[in-house]
Amino acid sequence: MAIRYLGETFDIHGGGTDLIFPHHECEIAQSEADTGKPFACYWLHNGMLNLSAEKMSKSLGNTLTIRELVRRHQPDALRLWMLGTHYRHPIEWSEERAEEAARALQTLWSPFERLRKFLDSSTFGSSADELPTEFAEHRTRFIEAMDDDVNTPAALGRLFDFGHALNRASSMSLQHLVRGAREFSSLGQTLGLAEPKPRIKGLSVEVREQIGSLIRERAEARRNRDWKRADEIRAKIESLGAVLTDTPSGTEWEMKPE
Image 1 (cartoon, rainbow, N blue to C red):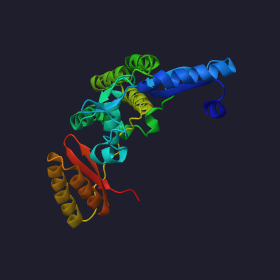
Image 2 (image 1 turned 90 degrees about the vertical axis):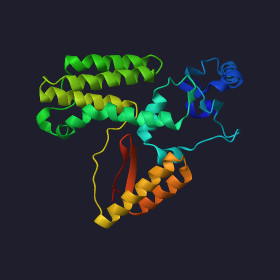
Image 3 (image 1 turned 60 degrees about the vertical axis):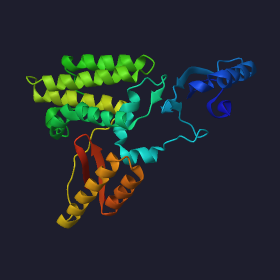
Image 4 (image 1 turned 180 degrees about the horizontal axis):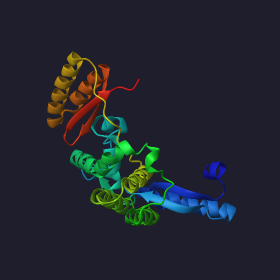
């Protein structure tokens, strides 16, 4: 099947570490004996996702679905949590780690938020402008980390360093700061971490009060780890025309996009 759709040799073959033997070794033996060519140039074997120290899998019946998790946590916080472990290593799921990632995400984007209002203005140049030396080293180190077997934990460290540099560069011209913020955003998006969207508050006073009450009720359900009830309340809030985002400082809401 791989040869049919990808050719006799293709770049990347993925899979879990549990498939190295015998499955992938068998694939190599069969395909290369038939074609006389290398089967795949790179093999990316990911570690297992564990739940309570046990591999998460359908056969064991201990799975959590993405739909379920994104109802509880910010999608980008989940990405940040996963990127904090190298893809070849096992990773342990916990609600606490996801909440820690949400706090870290807020810290990561805080320097970008200060400069957001200037980013769309042509007055402050574009991403084609030369990156100031103070920031160029962080981009270089980020790229080096990604080139090192997709070392996302190290790349995240470089990105946080970049953010700290943006915060410290108070004497730099606004044009250079904006250029740095654009590059910072670009590197974040490389990891799938989209820049946060501005919040818009709205709806009638009565509906806002109802949403506030439901958010408090949902927070209590989450404290009690009653995820089913928390999801039911989220659905009710969304039926009122709002969407929720859980942040370290509490749950925020905004109007649903038209």
